[in-house]
Length: 159
Image 1 (spheres, one colour):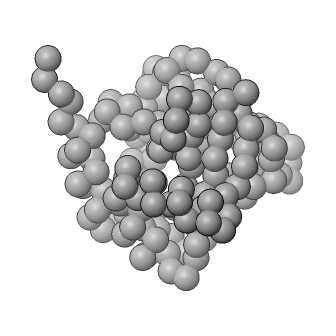
Image 2: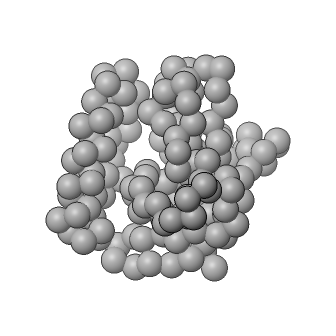
């Protein structure tokens, strides 16, 4: 059976600055596909890339906030989330909410489950960053665009 060529294509395209300009359209398309599939699939899934829906309580409102994100698989029950915000100068809102949380919920492939949240710092962050960049090289370009901001990096572990 032939391998899906779309993940390799996605990784190659993600290195292009044009992708950063297309971000708003990609986000809208992601939301539409997620709504049509009742959260089971998104644009990233269709492209063969790992994505999840993260639900975390808003740090100010206390209300559940849900966002679809690319993740980096980091073991059977561990997910790395990078707060790249498409290389923009400010941290994404979801990362501020996640930074204030101990737990969150993930929705992937029709399954919902709780995760423990841990923000990585120091040498642990540096090692996780290397794994994230090896998996999704576009983060390197996004980090360059966002300078001097350092991306928040989270480890989510299934409970």
